Length: 444
Ligand code: PFF
Image 1 (tube, rainbow, N blue to C red):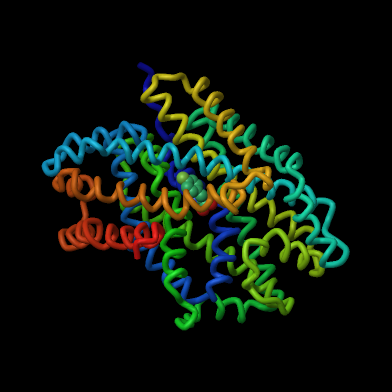
Image 2: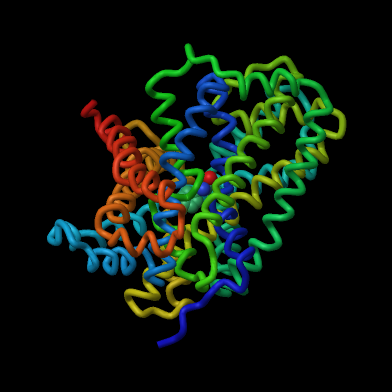
C-alpha cells in the first residue's frame, strides 16, 4: 500500500486549513448577512458561535483526523471501535462520514459556479467599470442570465482545482496555499488601508461593533450559528482529512485557535474593506447577496483608483474561493482513494468531472427545485441542514464515543480547562446544534 502523504511543515498545514476556511463565506457572505441582520449584535452572536460551536468542532475534527490517519468515513469507523457506551449506535458512525462526503460533492458543485462569477468580475475589472448604475448592475444580470458564460467560468475553475488536487498534498494543496494565502492577506491589508483612509470607516466600525439588540431575531441567531460552520469549513470532514496528513508534533488546540482566529479576522477585515466604501457613498449596508456583484462595482466606478481596487478585490475573492474549493474536492477524492483503493489520479479525474457536470445545473438558473434555482437549493440544504447535522454527529461521536483519557493525553490541557472543554463538547455545542437543526426542520 502506498504511504499516506503528510504536510511538509506546520505552517503548510495551518495555511491549507485556513485556506479552506477563508473563502467566499468570509468576503462575500459574511459582510452581506451582517448587513441584512443589522450589524453589531449579529457580529457578537457570530463570535460567540465561533467560540462555543465552531472551535470545539474544529478541535474534534482535527483530533479525529490526526489520530486515525483516515478519510472521514474510515475515521468515524475507527472512532466507533473504542466506544464504551451505546455500542450498537456507535456502529452507525461512518454514516456521518458519508454525509460529509456527500456535502462536499454538493457544496463544490455550486461553490465553483459562484467562484466562477468572481473570475468573470476579475476579467471585467481589467477593463474597468464605467457608465450609469444601471449599466454596471447589468453586468451581473447579464452573467446570471447567460448559462453558457457561467458554465465557461465554472469550467475554468474546476480545471484549476482538478490540476492542483492531481499534484497531491505537498506539491498541490500545500504549495498553492503557501502562495495564495500570503497574497490574500497582503491584498486584504492594502484594500483595508485604502478603505479606512477614504472616509466611512467610523460609521463602518460602529455598524459592525456597536450591538443593537433590537435587530437581533431568532433567524439572525440561526444564521450566525449556521455561518460559523460554513465559514470554518466544518461538518463535512475537511478538517478530518487535513488533520490526517499531520505528522505527530503539532498542538491541535493551538492550530485550531490560530485557524479560527485567522478566519474570523479575515471576515472582519473584509467588512472593514466593504462597509466604509458603501457608507462613504451614502448607501445602506443591507443590500443582500448583490452587495459584491452589483453595489461594489458601481462604487468602484466612482472612487479614485477604483479600477486598481476592483482588480485587487476580485483577485482576493478568487484566491479565497480557490483554496476552499481545493479542500472540498480533496475530501471526496481521498474517500475514494482510501476506501475504494482508487489511485489519486483516477479519483481526482472521475470525482472532479462528476462534480463539474453536477455543477452545470447550478449554472442554469431556469432549472428549479420547487421555487428555487438549483444553486440556492443546494446552498440551502447544505448550509442549513447538512453541515449542522454533520457537525452535530461529529461532536457527539467525539465527546461520547472516544475514550476521554485518549483525548486528555493528546490535548494536554490544564485540568480545569480540559473538563470545561469536555462539558462544552458534551452539552453546550450539541444543544446549540440540535436547536438549529430542529428549528430548520420546523419542529420548533
Ligand atoms: N469555508 C468556506 C467559506 O467560508 O467560503 C466554504 C467551505 C469550504 C465550506 C469547505 C465547507 C467546506 F468544507
